[in-house]
Length: 304
Image (cartoon, rainbow, N blue to C red; front, side, top):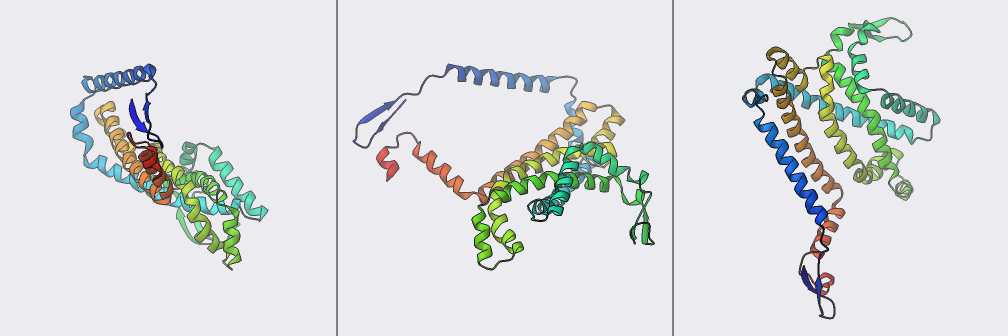
């Protein structure tokens, strides 16, 4: 309950509506959280000494670095592919639209795990890859596919190309959210289509693109764990090798989980600040609303 004054100076007594159901739900959630934490912490089968021992093990840290590399490179390539495919989808050329649509249809319609295994076993389809004249023409340079498509390279190909299909839809939605009048204004000033896209459309579309882009980045951090099926030397792969050797399955999975949680937490904080950078108006609006809702603030003070 709090008191405030209206514009005429009359005191108003505002009483919050009792919500017993909310307090019951809060209490139940707290009890459940405490019980789960207590169960995990005191469980004798979870060897915390092993968790502490391997948390900063050199092998774990090397796998963690590979996971970070896979995430950063795959997202960078995926964003580049996504922007290109999104522009093709919005092109006036029906051929480009069909090609872009087929790309997103195929790589979003097939499981990422299948794509990773396919790239890792590409040598079964093409034992030798090279550069030369197409249609079985002479080759200038040739390599053994197994020597080129290592587990790390296969992981990059699978993650990047798959991510490009999802980023294409995100970028397309962001571009379409910009008022067409902005493009027309840029073209009326004599700007080329490419310049209008990079200087006018994409900067405004970032407000729409950034939130799902951040979610995709966080998802990519966790999705890299699928690379373990092709021995990509990532965090999950190293954890598997260790628990297959010492049979401490749960402890090593806990080690990997703690590192994934740390990475996603850092990424979530970074996403928050990037969103604020590209949408300063929303942040200032939230501050004004919170200021106006502050207890004891009068209507006269709110409009001053």
